[in-house]
Image: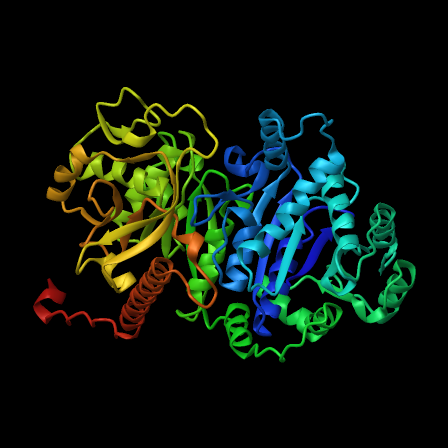
Length: 573
């Protein structure tokens, strides 16, 4: 029988419940256990697919096409597993399921209510992962939001009921709270944690473990006070202080014996985890021998979580290249307008060793992305385009290489004379927005001896997608004549998946989202090679700088020429 761990949060949102859950999963897996993580979100959207990145951060897409909360990305990265639709649940999906049953007559004669119908559906989803994975040892369920939110109450009530119905050793409750540091007083305050736990206990849930989030270390005195007022043992109160890298969190929790105590609470006998490889990886992340700078030209840069998987993929890619990757955030709209010329672009990208153009939707910021791609292509700066980045590359090369002056995308301009990007055939006639794009993992056939082949080391791969528009095949021949190589296509050859420029140090763009499959111990090959190209570009710049300095020093050391003496005749004259 599987064991169940429930992770909740209090005081404020964004405490890092997802990282805490993923870290626990990481440690339990290192102890030889089979672990599945799932996220329950209280909002009424069926999924986050139609939500703005400014509202919710990135939408993480799974192999089966499920559009999910970004925390599922942390789960996959920390535990190196692939999840599915059953691992993410929202209030919207709960009510959708219940109302569908009601329309079918499954509740005939009864009033449909939050208790028991909503809570029963939530409890059914808690155990669904265990039913579909009978060999799983532990299921960790994170509840979104904070204790005290109205929309969270059905989920917390479902947990209360579920724990009552299970043997005592089969469930555990982990609660995250904030322990703020009051600068004026010069001390941390435990009262918010006490109130948060009191709120949770008033619902009927006594936490077994507390993780106290703080930007300062929490001393023994504060931990003992929290344990006393929150009714749990001192050793079950953990210091969840801020760290330089999220990949340090499992190590921090292990140092405090969180994983051992959790296993004891659940009655699980395990071996001590071997975290040596994880420690070596973290060491490179925290203290990289060198650093490269990558410009990310996007339209949602005000909220970095909109590109969370890209940020993590760069961290992963830096490890085998022995560098830290510093992201330089460039608002694509700042690169638009008549005043934006080569001089402005040189200033923006002067200290950058690579340029990435990520995905997105809508026409805002597109001219700026096109300008950035043109700069990268003309100045031999390593370039990597993802999804919309590929489509912008098609527009840029169509105009400057192929000679299609008005090359554009039908997504932004239905009247463009050269729609090098157009709506996918399968999307024509689709009117609903949610869950209707080309979603999930699809196979890709790779061209032999191409850069893509060099990166992947094989002739086929599978990558996750999220798009409606694609390369217009009517223009493929013209682009190929101009030197563009379509190095990745769908098995039937109808959909362009990757393109590249062989004459460029690194110019590659993809229609899919490689960042969704990168892992700390297995960096995505495209990110790995892109960072390697950025390292090579940096070395080239350094060598050029050295040569210029040598030339300057040589000129300075060379003795001045002595003017010839004038003859007597000249002097007399």
